[in-house]
Image 1 (cartoon, rainbow, N blue to C red):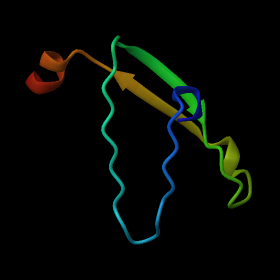
Image 2: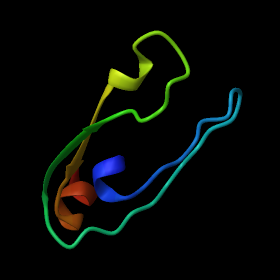
Image 3: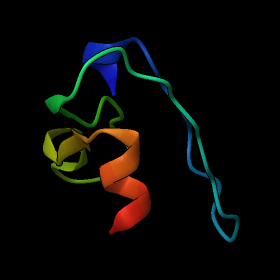
Image 4: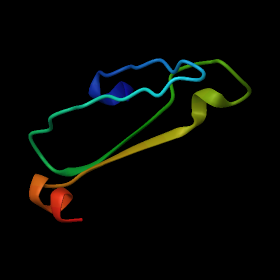
Length: 58
């Protein structure tokens, strides 16, 4: 997510996972920053941050 200063490259055939700790809840949006295919760099990315207890209950 470029707007958060985080970049993780995908590796075909492997599962990538990244943990982040946020200080506030909210909706963070951005777009892919890679140019690896037709219009791939315009794929939207949305991260929804919820309180920890709400996440654990659901």
